[in-house]
Each structure stands twice: as structure tokens, then as C-alpha cells.
Image (cartoon, rainbow, N blue to C red):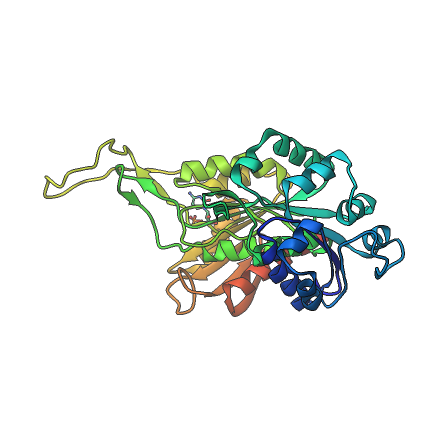
Length: 399
Ligand code: C5P
């Protein structure tokens, strides 16, 4: 997405300005054309020469020096670029942008530029929570400026809290997604993905769970976002990093997953239900930890709601994709589910086959459709399976 894109990076005088050097380097490696504008404060922290060497272009710091690259530099840079990014964005530049103050090259260029803008606020937690800063950020958001949320962690002032500049790799990914949402082949598509296994409480410390790693659903969510879709990921507990630029709703039980899915269902175009949902739950979850006093313990289980079936019943316009992990009669069982759950497609795999199913990085799947047709793409990575599913969803909405 970044190849050939023209990006102006505004660097202000936050201590995290040193990270922006790496950001510029990553963008250049991704073949973007980068121009850097620094505020005077930023030049006290990082040498403009460093940004010049890394970006491969001149660095603009001053309205009045007379040796600019362009005529009327502040207008020309805004016109030249596809996107402006301010990283780090201090309380000061945020205040100026929100209130229409243009008193140096960066703030003037931002005002003259009618291209999309992203800001990455980075400052001390108290400053970030200051009502004036919060008000200014709200104004900028209403003005259509994208605000990348700051990260939490160690701050230069010695405390732990929010206000850290996100890592350069994450900012690059955010910029990538920004372009994808405008130009990606799934731009405009709203997608609900579920992933991971659900857990049903037996008592406060024990649960019934399953072996789902969540890898398949996470791969789909990540790829869909990279291709420009607006993705909500409803996820059971997993040991995976949340994919960038995806709204993750963490859940534990099947009932929680159902509630989360129903809340977003009317607004989405497609649902990919990769979660391994617990079909049964203990009739009664003990309030206290169960003691091992008895020789045997009997749990009575009640059937959980079938989320996908309920979505199938309430379908208005959504394209519904289910998964079928089977250990026998793969095609027959999967085809029955397409009918019973009112699906538009099912992704079936025999989990007993080597290279397929839980916790592997690959999968061997068959796609089954309501008209009885079957597609068999063979052994693929979960990433590739995810992209194929997304291609089919895309085809459906192109018709
Ligand atoms: O019927 P079975 O559980 O094998 O169907 C699997 C598909 O149905 C998966 O897509 C899974 O996410 C979904 N499912 C569900 N709610 C359940 C059980 C399964 O949404 N209670």
C-alpha cells in the first residue's frame, strides 16, 4: 500500500522524536516518498541532518531560511503529499491545529494542506488527560483528523501510563491501513469475525474449553483489515497479539460471544465465524471452588445457543460463513450445516488429517456452497485460506 505514496512527516518536540527516525526509515524501505518537517523544538532533540539522511530528501524547519525545496514551501508540501502524519504530536501542536494557529512551518503547512492527516499524540499521562488537550483532540477528531491512540508503558518522565508514542512498526501499520481503507480491495466492507474457543465456567477457577488457538480467525481479521475492511473481531481467550487496526471485543463464554455478535450483526456485511464455540455449559457454575472430597463428580451440562444458527435465522443481507471441524463424514456433515444454519458458505476441514485443524499454521479445507458446489484448494497456510475466503466474500459483493 505504501509504494509510491507521498507522505509528509511532521516532527514536533516530544522526547519520542527519536522513534520517528525509525518510522521514516520503515516508510522509505516500503518505498514511500517521505519529506520531513521539524518544529524548532524537535531540532533540539534530533538533528535535521539525521532525518535528511534517512528520508533521502531535504528537511524543512524554517519558514524564513530561503533555501527551501519548493516555492512557497508550506503550500507546496501540502499539495505534494498524499498524507500528512504528525509523530510525535505534542500538546502544543494539537492545541494549535485544533484552534487554527499557524505560527511556524509545520502548523502553517498543516493548515494549508487539504489532504488526509494522522496525528500520533505522545506526552505525559497528565498532559494527555488534561481537559484542554482532550477537548482539542475531540475537535480534531470532529474535523476528520485520524488520531492514532497513544500506547501505554514507560514514559520518559519516569512513570508508567498512557501517552507513549506507539512503536514505529505500529505507526507504519496504521498508515498502511489508512491507505488500505481508502484503496484496498475490501474498502467499505464491514466484517464480523469470531475466533478462539469459548470457555464455560465450572467454578471460579475451572472451565470447559477446547483446543482452538484462534489462529485462523486472527489471520482472517488481520488480512481483511490489511485489504481495507472495517473489522470487528469477537475473540475468546487466546495467546495471540490483537491484529492492528481491528476492533477486538474480548469474550469468554458462548453467551457473551452471542451478545457481542448480535450487537454488531445488523451493521455488518459479512460474518466469518471461525470460533470454536462450546456446545454445552455446566448447568450451574459453582460460586466457590469445588473441593475434591468425592470419588467422582458429575457435571450436568446444558446446551448453549448456536450463535451461527441464530445469525442464519436473523439474516437480512449478511453473507454468512461458517466453519466445520469434523473427524468423520466431512462433506455430508458440512453440507448439512450449510442448510441447517442458513449459510452462504462453509469452510470444512477434517481435523484428524496432518496439517489441518487446531494449533497448526496450515489447513486443508473444502469450501461448500448452498447450491451443492464444492471448491478444494488443497494444503494452504491459514493466511492463504483466510485470503481465499475473503476473495469469495468480495466476489459475492461485486455481483
Ligand atoms: O455445528 P458446529 O458447531 O460444528 O458448527 C460449526 C460452526 O458453527 C462454526 O462456524 C462455529 O463458529 C459455529 N457455532 C456457533 N455456535 C455454537 C456452535 C458452533 O456459532 N454454539
